[in-house]
Length: 229
Image (cartoon, rainbow, N blue to C red; front, side):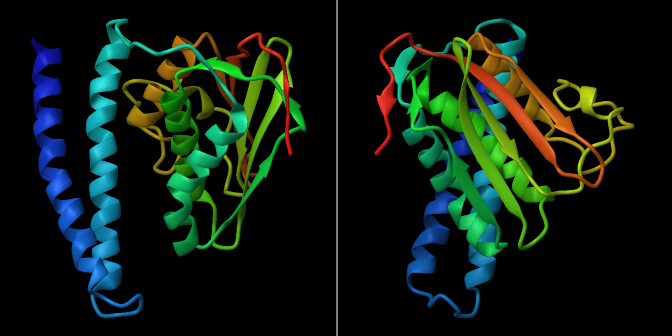
């Protein structure tokens, strides 16, 4: 009953949010880039998008907890996945501003995954890195072979995370002692669940004052490698 209630509330909430987002974007078309009210409309749109994602995270978290999260396992090239995730966060990157660098070898096998889910994971980790990286900072997205897996990493030049707080990052119910800015809340739990549903693992390496790097692995599809152009 709780799962059905959460799903219904999430669905109704997202319907209302879609009206807010569409209306705000229509208004933005009539306002010049530097016109009055433009920044406020952009803030409304970003906030609505974040609430929309939170509503989806609630549904995903329920599915993860009861073991019913479903993910596809098609063969997908890695580079288009990275490009799509970067594209999703590009508007926020431009506002801060920050630099996002993409690094990957010339040869990397396709991965066995649900493409949209892995885009979601990378975009979530990028969003987290952006929140804690100062203006003018750099975020690096990497993908590389690691045995029979592809290993992804998102590194930032933010404040870093103390060792005693790192085990709390992916908790479903974050302890009250976790400091503000030290994790992604529910999104981290969902991200972990999606990665593990693919047969991968996720972890973080960080030191205070030296930035953070989130890693995760996804099994390759066992197909022939592709050569990047």
